[in-house]
Amino acid sequence: MESIFRQGLDEADYEVIIVNDGTKDHSMEVIEDIISAHANITVINQENLSLSVARNNGIAAAKGEYILMPDSDDLLVEESVPILLEKAIETKADLVVADFLEMTDEEIAKSPTLEQPPLTIKERKGEELYLQDLNPGQCYVWRTLYKRSFLQENNITFVPGISCQDVPYTHECYLKSKKSLRISLLLNIYRRGHASATSHFNKKKCMDLCMAVAATWKLRNLEGLSPETRLRLNDNIFVSFTLISYVMLWGESTRSERREIFNHLNRLAPDLSFSHGIKQKVVTFLYKLSPELYYAIRKILKGFTPSPYGN
Image 1 (spheres, rainbow, N blue to C red):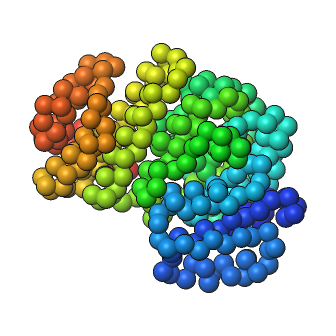
Image 2 (tube, helix red, strand yellow):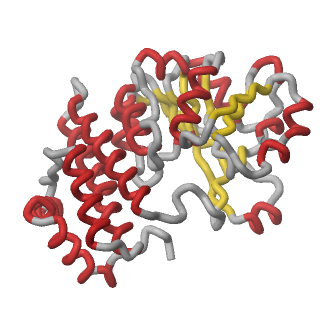
């Protein structure tokens, strides 16, 4: 919250929307002084409905031309937003995608100020940005400035109630964008080594991954996508699909849990299949033949598989 107000912007020119997603701790008490000190803050209180619903409600309440969605556990680099905002307003871009830096709390404390790299700006169509810039393992919505009318006109919202909601959301935004900017500006400090929404996995989060895969799979039906883009979309979805099995492997899931998860995915995306290369074809064959067999082979190869927990 404090980093938001270290941007050098006139508070009359922007709004800050805080969505209290039914917190049961003292979070709201901690920021009482910040709320009382700034007239441009709006607080939305809701029962615990998930981050995706909180974001949807925050966007629905927004009035600004552009929207930024910082995560509550990360930081904005000082005076980075005005540069993004200036370029967005100047070009009327649908998306302005910036850079970020991963740091631990100790590194942040040792480096209170950051030097920005030389500024470069590249204007791209959405599909170009998708092909050249989207990393399926880093679908972070907080690194992008979104034109509010673009989100509204294309009916782009987060899948309610799931984690991993960034994956289908980011893919849809990139694929539907007509004009985007890729800018070499450090916007966020991603705090590494803290407890985030994706640092621990369980059955619920595997089920959420299934929903994220299915929602992204539906994007193949968008009209006008080039063959190259469709192929990349297929490969990106495959990355998310394989993560489901990785999570079950490293989380030591039970057979009944695995059956429930795979059945859930099959109901959501019954036509899910991959055919780009031998690996994808083999994985698809095993998954269609017997998800438990597919899992068993993954388990045999576990020693060669990196952990999704990063350790």
